[in-house]
Amino acid sequence: MPKRENFSTSLKCPNCKLVGRAGWSENENPVHGDGLDSTLESVTDGFLIGHNKNLQGDTKILCSKCNITIVN
Image (cartoon, rainbow, N blue to C red; front, side, top):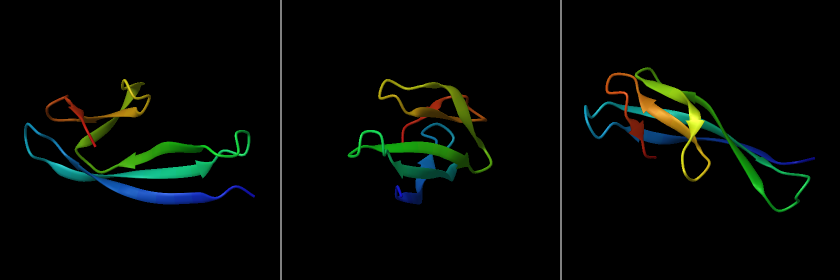
């Protein structure tokens, strides 16, 4: 059975200084055997999960007040 981990990361808007958390799940990928798939599950109030991916292929997180991408 594949392993599953849940963890959170800190968020901070560089513009308005709002702070929050992002909740992630990480799954062992049984197809590839050695890779992990990370999924953004949630963000705290004041942040939004974007519809597009960033250059690294990760889901974008946006400050809902400033509408800028948060680098985590």
